Length: 230
Image (cartoon, rainbow, N blue to C red; front, side, top):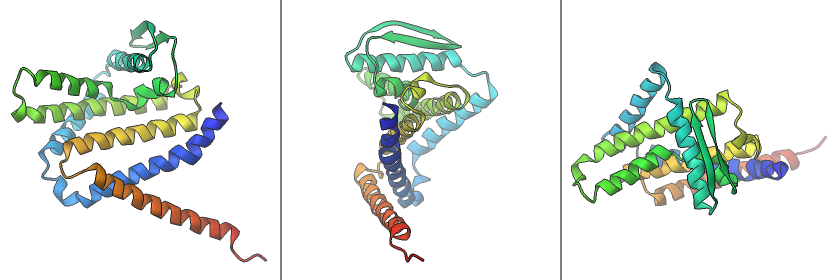
Protein backbone atom coordinates (compact mmCIF):
# COMPACT_ATOMS: atom_id res chain seq x y z
CA UNK A 1 0.00 0.00 0.00
CA UNK A 2 1.12 3.54 -0.73
CA UNK A 3 0.81 4.73 2.87
CA UNK A 4 3.14 1.94 4.02
CA UNK A 5 5.66 2.84 1.35
CA UNK A 6 5.35 6.49 2.37
CA UNK A 7 6.55 5.69 5.88
CA UNK A 8 9.24 3.33 4.56
CA UNK A 9 10.52 6.18 2.41
CA UNK A 10 10.24 8.79 5.16
CA UNK A 11 11.71 6.80 8.05
CA UNK A 12 13.93 4.35 6.20
CA UNK A 13 15.04 5.36 2.73
CA UNK A 14 15.60 9.08 3.31
CA UNK A 15 17.89 8.58 6.36
CA UNK A 16 19.71 5.79 4.50
CA UNK A 17 20.15 8.02 1.44
CA UNK A 18 21.56 10.75 3.67
CA UNK A 19 24.04 8.35 5.25
CA UNK A 20 25.20 7.01 1.86
CA UNK A 21 25.64 10.56 0.55
CA UNK A 22 27.52 11.55 3.71
CA UNK A 23 29.79 8.51 3.42
CA UNK A 24 30.66 9.28 -0.20
CA UNK A 25 31.18 12.97 0.49
CA UNK A 26 33.47 12.34 3.45
CA UNK A 27 35.45 9.72 1.52
CA UNK A 28 36.03 12.12 -1.38
CA UNK A 29 36.84 14.99 0.99
CA UNK A 30 39.60 12.95 2.62
CA UNK A 31 41.08 12.26 -0.84
CA UNK A 32 40.67 15.82 -2.15
CA UNK A 33 44.40 16.45 -2.49
CA UNK A 34 44.84 13.27 -4.53
CA UNK A 35 41.86 13.56 -6.89
CA UNK A 36 43.34 16.14 -9.25
CA UNK A 37 46.09 13.77 -10.36
CA UNK A 38 43.77 10.85 -11.09
CA UNK A 39 43.83 10.15 -14.81
CA UNK A 40 40.75 7.94 -14.58
CA UNK A 41 38.69 10.66 -12.90
CA UNK A 42 39.82 13.26 -15.42
CA UNK A 43 38.64 11.12 -18.32
CA UNK A 44 35.39 10.25 -16.54
CA UNK A 45 34.79 13.96 -15.98
CA UNK A 46 35.63 14.71 -19.61
CA UNK A 47 32.98 12.21 -20.68
CA UNK A 48 30.42 13.83 -18.37
CA UNK A 49 31.17 17.33 -19.67
CA UNK A 50 31.07 16.16 -23.29
CA UNK A 51 27.58 14.76 -22.84
CA UNK A 52 26.35 17.88 -21.04
CA UNK A 53 27.48 19.99 -23.99
CA UNK A 54 25.69 17.67 -26.43
CA UNK A 55 22.57 17.60 -24.24
CA UNK A 56 22.17 21.37 -24.20
CA UNK A 57 23.35 22.15 -27.75
CA UNK A 58 22.08 19.38 -30.03
CA UNK A 59 18.59 17.84 -30.39
CA UNK A 60 18.03 15.33 -27.63
CA UNK A 61 18.00 11.66 -28.72
CA UNK A 62 14.70 10.75 -27.08
CA UNK A 63 14.36 7.46 -28.96
CA UNK A 64 17.74 6.31 -27.61
CA UNK A 65 16.68 7.17 -24.06
CA UNK A 66 13.27 5.49 -24.39
CA UNK A 67 14.90 2.38 -25.85
CA UNK A 68 17.31 2.16 -22.89
CA UNK A 69 14.45 2.85 -20.47
CA UNK A 70 12.26 0.03 -21.78
CA UNK A 71 15.23 -2.32 -22.19
CA UNK A 72 16.04 -1.81 -18.51
CA UNK A 73 12.46 -2.72 -17.63
CA UNK A 74 12.80 -5.85 -19.77
CA UNK A 75 16.11 -6.87 -18.17
CA UNK A 76 14.57 -6.41 -14.73
CA UNK A 77 11.60 -8.56 -15.72
CA UNK A 78 13.86 -11.37 -16.97
CA UNK A 79 16.04 -11.07 -13.86
CA UNK A 80 12.99 -11.65 -11.64
CA UNK A 81 11.76 -14.56 -13.73
CA UNK A 82 9.02 -12.79 -15.68
CA UNK A 83 8.19 -12.80 -19.37
CA UNK A 84 8.21 -9.92 -21.84
CA UNK A 85 5.33 -10.23 -24.30
CA UNK A 86 5.84 -6.98 -26.19
CA UNK A 87 8.06 -3.93 -26.12
CA UNK A 88 7.27 -0.72 -27.96
CA UNK A 89 9.70 2.17 -28.37
CA UNK A 90 9.27 5.57 -29.98
CA UNK A 91 10.59 9.08 -29.47
CA UNK A 92 7.29 9.94 -27.72
CA UNK A 93 7.40 7.08 -25.23
CA UNK A 94 7.17 3.34 -24.90
CA UNK A 95 5.98 0.43 -22.83
CA UNK A 96 6.64 -3.19 -21.96
CA UNK A 97 3.90 -5.78 -21.57
CA UNK A 98 4.73 -8.41 -18.99
CA UNK A 99 3.35 -10.79 -16.38
CA UNK A 100 5.75 -9.54 -13.68
CA UNK A 101 6.15 -6.24 -11.87
CA UNK A 102 7.66 -4.99 -8.63
CA UNK A 103 9.45 -1.93 -7.28
CA UNK A 104 12.82 -2.94 -8.69
CA UNK A 105 11.43 -3.54 -12.17
CA UNK A 106 9.35 -0.35 -12.21
CA UNK A 107 12.09 1.98 -10.95
CA UNK A 108 15.16 0.32 -12.48
CA UNK A 109 15.44 2.74 -15.45
CA UNK A 110 15.74 5.67 -13.05
CA UNK A 111 18.76 4.34 -11.20
CA UNK A 112 20.51 1.81 -13.44
CA UNK A 113 22.57 3.44 -16.25
CA UNK A 114 21.89 0.80 -18.88
CA UNK A 115 24.36 2.15 -21.44
CA UNK A 116 27.14 2.28 -18.83
CA UNK A 117 26.39 -1.35 -18.01
CA UNK A 118 26.49 -2.26 -21.71
CA UNK A 119 29.81 -0.42 -22.11
CA UNK A 120 31.40 -2.39 -19.25
CA UNK A 121 30.01 -5.67 -20.64
CA UNK A 122 31.27 -4.96 -24.19
CA UNK A 123 34.67 -3.88 -22.88
CA UNK A 124 34.91 -7.12 -20.90
CA UNK A 125 34.04 -9.19 -24.00
CA UNK A 126 36.48 -7.25 -26.17
CA UNK A 127 39.27 -7.85 -23.67
CA UNK A 128 39.26 -11.57 -24.58
CA UNK A 129 40.37 -10.77 -28.16
CA UNK A 130 42.15 -7.42 -27.94
CA UNK A 131 44.78 -6.24 -25.39
CA UNK A 132 43.14 -3.22 -23.78
CA UNK A 133 45.50 -2.53 -20.88
CA UNK A 134 46.72 0.77 -22.29
CA UNK A 135 43.32 1.96 -23.44
CA UNK A 136 41.37 2.11 -20.18
CA UNK A 137 40.98 5.88 -20.53
CA UNK A 138 38.51 5.23 -23.36
CA UNK A 139 36.34 3.16 -21.02
CA UNK A 140 36.50 5.88 -18.35
CA UNK A 141 35.39 8.53 -20.84
CA UNK A 142 32.56 6.33 -22.15
CA UNK A 143 31.40 5.64 -18.59
CA UNK A 144 31.37 9.37 -17.88
CA UNK A 145 29.39 10.09 -21.03
CA UNK A 146 26.87 7.28 -20.53
CA UNK A 147 26.37 7.96 -16.81
CA UNK A 148 25.83 11.65 -17.57
CA UNK A 149 23.34 10.60 -20.28
CA UNK A 150 21.47 8.57 -17.68
CA UNK A 151 21.57 11.36 -15.09
CA UNK A 152 20.37 14.17 -17.37
CA UNK A 153 17.50 12.22 -18.91
CA UNK A 154 16.41 10.85 -15.54
CA UNK A 155 16.16 14.37 -14.13
CA UNK A 156 14.43 15.62 -17.28
CA UNK A 157 11.80 12.88 -17.24
CA UNK A 158 11.08 13.15 -13.53
CA UNK A 159 10.74 16.94 -13.65
CA UNK A 160 8.84 17.44 -16.91
CA UNK A 161 6.49 14.45 -17.13
CA UNK A 162 4.35 12.40 -14.77
CA UNK A 163 5.88 8.94 -14.68
CA UNK A 164 3.46 6.10 -13.93
CA UNK A 165 6.43 4.05 -12.68
CA UNK A 166 6.86 6.62 -9.92
CA UNK A 167 3.24 7.42 -9.07
CA UNK A 168 2.19 3.78 -8.65
CA UNK A 169 4.56 3.40 -5.70
CA UNK A 170 4.10 6.88 -4.25
CA UNK A 171 6.19 9.96 -4.96
CA UNK A 172 8.15 10.08 -1.67
CA UNK A 173 9.02 6.39 -1.66
CA UNK A 174 9.95 6.34 -5.34
CA UNK A 175 12.09 9.49 -5.27
CA UNK A 176 13.96 8.46 -2.12
CA UNK A 177 14.51 4.97 -3.56
CA UNK A 178 15.74 6.38 -6.88
CA UNK A 179 18.12 8.80 -5.16
CA UNK A 180 19.48 6.09 -2.85
CA UNK A 181 20.18 3.68 -5.68
CA UNK A 182 21.76 6.40 -7.83
CA UNK A 183 24.15 7.44 -5.06
CA UNK A 184 25.13 3.80 -4.51
CA UNK A 185 25.75 3.28 -8.26
CA UNK A 186 27.79 6.49 -8.41
CA UNK A 187 29.81 5.27 -5.43
CA UNK A 188 30.44 2.00 -7.26
CA UNK A 189 31.69 3.83 -10.37
CA UNK A 190 33.98 6.10 -8.35
CA UNK A 191 35.45 3.17 -6.42
CA UNK A 192 36.03 1.50 -9.79
CA UNK A 193 37.82 4.61 -11.06
CA UNK A 194 39.80 5.60 -7.94
CA UNK A 195 42.22 3.06 -6.44
CA UNK A 196 42.47 5.10 -3.22
CA UNK A 197 38.73 4.99 -2.64
CA UNK A 198 37.54 1.74 -1.03
CA UNK A 199 34.33 0.33 0.38
CA UNK A 200 36.06 0.11 3.77
CA UNK A 201 36.70 3.86 3.65
CA UNK A 202 33.09 4.45 2.59
CA UNK A 203 31.82 2.28 5.46
CA UNK A 204 33.84 4.30 8.00
CA UNK A 205 32.16 7.45 6.67
CA UNK A 206 28.77 5.74 6.85
CA UNK A 207 29.26 4.86 10.53
CA UNK A 208 30.47 8.37 11.28
CA UNK A 209 27.36 9.78 9.61
CA UNK A 210 25.17 7.40 11.62
CA UNK A 211 26.79 8.57 14.85
CA UNK A 212 26.27 12.24 13.99
CA UNK A 213 22.68 11.68 12.84
CA UNK A 214 21.94 9.76 16.06
CA UNK A 215 23.38 12.56 18.20
CA UNK A 216 21.37 15.12 16.25
CA UNK A 217 18.21 13.06 16.75
CA UNK A 218 18.84 12.75 20.49
CA UNK A 219 19.45 16.49 20.78
CA UNK A 220 16.21 17.20 18.91
CA UNK A 221 14.30 14.78 21.16
CA UNK A 222 15.68 16.39 24.30
CA UNK A 223 14.82 19.83 22.98
CA UNK A 224 11.24 18.82 22.22
CA UNK A 225 10.40 16.63 25.20
CA UNK A 226 12.92 17.27 27.98
CA UNK A 227 12.94 21.04 28.17
CA UNK A 228 11.51 23.05 31.01
CA UNK A 229 7.79 23.74 30.78
CA UNK A 230 5.97 26.89 31.84
